[in-house]
Amino acid sequence: MWATARHLGLAAWLAAAGCGAASLAAAGCGGRAPDAGAAAGGGPGAGGGARATLFSRLGGMDGIRALVDELALHLAADDRVQGFFADTDFRRFKAHLVVQLCALTGGPCRDRGRSLRAVHAGRGIRAAHFDAFLEDVAGALETLRAGERERDELLGALRRLEPEIVAPE
Ligand code: HEM
Image (cartoon, rainbow, N blue to C red):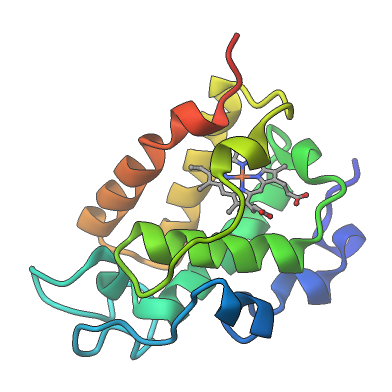
């Protein structure tokens, strides 16, 4: 039983991730989306009409940060996956995930980090772990009251990354 948030350092865990750090600015993380209101914040559901990017509809950078914070809590509490993160620096992990999700959802970030395949290779991540991870994403979205359409789009986009993350049997 290693994975209480306290054990991992609650302050680090909950610290805002993402685009404040110079290193992430270098990674291509912008603060604002090109479409109006995209990064105004306010959490999932705060931004945009039918044609807005998923990034915008998730609440821009503030919404993505809130989602990643919430996801981290779900992962920490999930004994199906928590063991993978035993040695993880969560401030760094969350910062990278914010950039990743920002880029994935059409936000103004460019992910110039290591490839997902390289990051996850050799960790023994199986399909069941991937499914658990997506359930945690869904749980985080529900906690934040994201819309159904946003949930389905984000889960669909993440599902398409499965071949880069799951180890071959
Ligand atoms: C589509 C789903 C996923 C995405 C988008 C994703 C994304 C990321 C990102 C952006 C990083 C940070 C990379 C870096 O530091 O350079 C990372 C690291 C990591 N991911 Fe994932 N990941 C996914 C699924 C999973 C799953 C299913 C597991 C295991 C259950 C997992 C376990 C890890 C671990 C252990 C690390 C390394 C953390 C560390 O630095 O200690 N990931 N992932």
